[in-house]
Amino acid sequence: MKLSKLKNTKAYQFIRTVRFFYLYEVFFNSRKLFRKIIKPEEYKKLKKLKNIHNNDKCFILATGPSLTMDDLKKLNNEITFGMNSLCRAFDETGWETTYFAIQDKSVYKKMYEDLGKLSTTKLFVSDDNNDVSQINCELTRFPLNIYNHKTVCNKFIYKYSDSICDEISSGFTIAYTILQIATYMGFKEIYLLGCDCDYVDDKEKRHFIETGHYDPTYKTIGNKMIEAYKEAKQYADANNIKIYNATRGGKLEVFERVDLDDVLIQKND
Image (cartoon, rainbow, N blue to C red):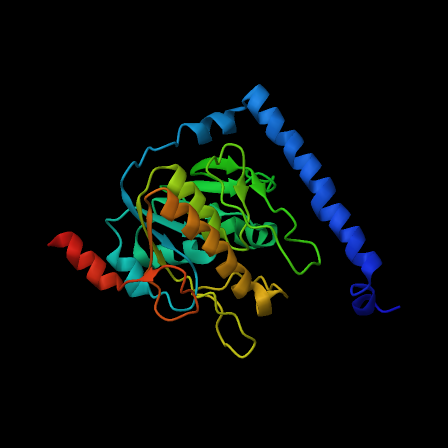
């Protein structure tokens, strides 16, 4: 039987569900319990981040193709979060984002040498990426829970964590992870840029700067991201947090849309 046909069988789907959800959850929850009892250094570092930016404003810079170098240059004096391949733009901008995050193992391997060049940013890396020997900037590891996102199923688990010490919930995008970090840190006004959520085969460019990693799930990943962002919206509304979408175009309509230039002008008035 060809592998493509095998993947569509119920037996294959059952095995993946057991492996990537039930067994994974047992392992993850065991590690969560260990962190609470032993309180390793990474747990303590995460706990110290609670509300350190209480009531501040930040900008989360995703890597959708709508993002421009001009956008980055306008944000030099703001509190910013970068991600994935955005670090390849820092030579041109002349500055690094305040914070930076990466979680996907394949992307991490592709970006490893670039991450080693970072110096002033504070880097967040998921704790399933083990090789950090070449990282020179301040590093914090976080516990990423991917739930059943690697299983073959029609309905995925979407959660929004209010304690990044215990877990950060996967939402099919590192931007969703950063949202959880940002709200834990106390930010009450958050702006998203480059969150296009628009991945189609006929697009020549999927990212502002490519990583060299191709994900075969790109055809459906945008809709999965949007479902995750709905969870973020519910959490924000319940906790008096404002999340705005300053992305040009794209498919993300969960958050109120704003114009980046208008936001920056209002700040300076």
